[in-house]
Amino acid sequence: YPEVDNTIKIGVMNPITGPLEPDAYGFWWGADQAISDLNDMYPDLDFELIEVDSGCDGNMASSAAYDLVEEGVVAVVGAACSGASMGANAVLSAYGIPMISYASTNPGLSDDEDYPLFYRVVPSDAIQGPAGADMIAYDVMMNDSLAILHMDNSYGTGLADSVKEAWEEVGYGFCGAGMQSYAEDTTDFSWLVDPIVADDTCEAVYLASYVTDAAGIIEELHDQGYTGEIYAGDGAAGIDLYNYMTDNSLLEGVTVTAPRAGFSYGDFEERYDANADD
Image (tube, rainbow, N blue to C red; front, side, top):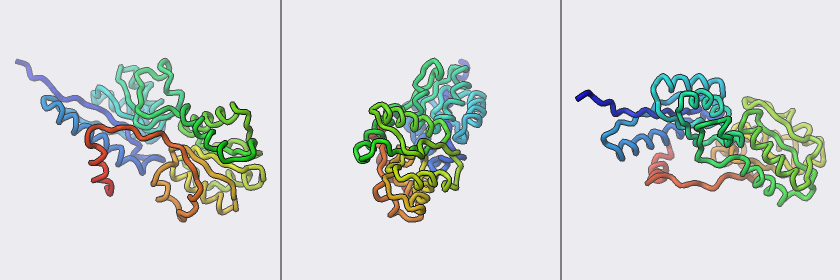
């Protein structure tokens, strides 16, 4: 009988470099655990994980997707950043390779015609936007008092637009600072905060950010004497935000939205907790 190759290669697109680099090891660890589970479930098969660096960037992810095609993967886990998923999908879908993202939330990715064979296990920001707008409206007394600061990548723009649409849908408006974008590698946020502090009507600021830039913006707001409310989406939510703050007390009163935690396979949660220090 001819020898049968029972190896099944699954790709994982991981932001080993770029703004989500701090999360990369955890993403890889989860994918590696999944491969171990599959091998336990199907002992006659050999599941193999092929990791590539998405860089949290569309162009880099597109190039990495070609590498996965050459490796012979049958499916891809990822990417994390929405822009990376968009770039990779153009390549992978052309080869009939499905991808399932664990973190990409841009609403546009729900379009099956634009992004065929793309799936995700996290909700679209079209859901989180109205929740964010409702959160702000609950606290803020002046309806035309919101400023939105967002990264100019697919995640930041998609979430900010979703919040803006929901905020305007109920008849609310913005303070003079309005809606401002910034590059995801920005480190000096003074120019973003200046118009907010200068405008007495800016009672609330919403951040469509990751943890590193959110920490920088929050610190700059406090340094300039801002006394209004600060809100953010899930990109800045979680304990990692504290790791990037020079003074954790500045996070008192910062309010965030995040999707409800999902369910994981088997005893994965217990395994993750047991290895949390890593």
